[in-house]
Image (cartoon, rainbow, N blue to C red; front, side, top):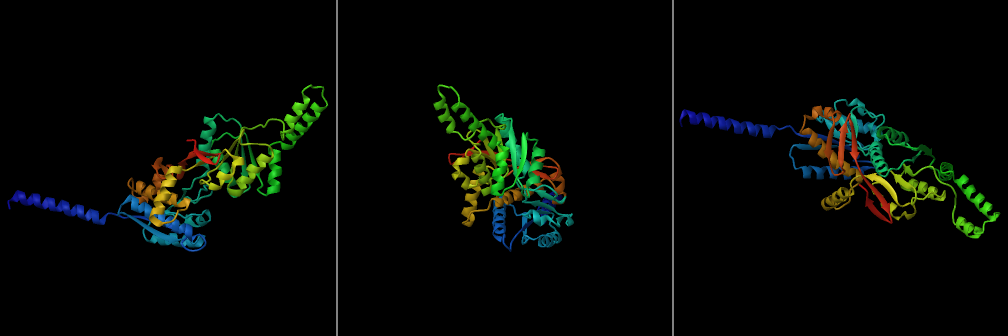
Length: 384
C-alpha cells in the first residue's frame, strides 16, 4: 500500500471511529417526571405516564430518557423525589401536577420544573406554570370582544382560591371590564347578589309601575299594551352587553340560572366563561345557550384521544395532553441548547407548536394561544 493510500485510509478510519464514538457517547436528554403514582390521584398519574410514553414513541429519538418519580400528591414526597432526580443528573422536570406540591421545590435550585398548574402567583423561581392560565384565556376572550365591538362587559368571579389568579389575568391581558363583581357560590346568597348586579328589583318594579300607569290611563289600546307587558318579567335596559362568568361545573350553571331568573338572557346578552375542557354536560343546558368560551384546539384534542385509545384501549385525562406536548417542548428546546441552560431559553421569547396549540414562552412564563368556541342548540361551534 503506497504512503498516500495509507494516509487516506487512516484518516477515513479515524473519521469513522470519531463518528461512532460520538454517536455512542451522545448525551442523553434526561427528563424527570413528577406525578402521583400512589394515593388518590394515581390514575391521573398513570394517564400522564402513558401520554409521555406516547410522545417518546412519536418523537422517535433514542436520546430521550424519561425518569418518573412518585409525588403521592404530597409536598414532602415531591421534594424527596425531586432530590432523587437531581442525584441522577436530571436538569428539567415535567410536573408536579398540583399547586400544593410545589411548596418546597425552591430548595432544588439546579432543577427547572414545568408544572401542570395553571396558577401563576407565588411560584418558586425554578417553577414554570405550563397550565392554561387566566391570562391565556382572557387574551382570547379579549380578542372576541374586540372583534365583535362589545363595549360593556361585566366580570363575575366566585369567592374561590383562584380569585386572585383571575384578577391577575385581567391585569395582564388588559381586557376592558365595565364592572367587576365577586360573588358567593352559596345558592341563596348567589341569587340575591345577581339580583343586585342586574338591578332586578328595580326593573321588576318598573314593569309593575308601567302596567299600573297604563291601566289608569285613557289610552285606547291599553288592553293590548297591558297583555304585552304581562308577558314580560322586567322593564328597563341593562347597563352591560356581555357577562364573563369565571366559574365551572354546577356552579357555572347556577350563575347562568340566576341570570335567567333576573331576566338576563343569553339571547340578547353574551354569556362568556373560561376554558371548560369541552364539558359535554353544557350541551344539554339549552337555557344558557349560546355560551362562549376559550379552549384548546378541539380537533387536535380529539385526534390525540383517538391515538391514545388506540395505543392503550382507554381514554386519556385532559392533562395528559399537556404532558404529551411538554415532552415535545423540552426536546425542541434541548436541540437549541444544553439542558443545563434550559432556564435561559424560558427567559427569551420562544414559540412552540404542540397538540394543544401554540406555546408562547417569555420571562419564565408559558402562555397558550387558544381557540374560541360557543355552544348553541346543543352543538359546539368554533368561532376562531
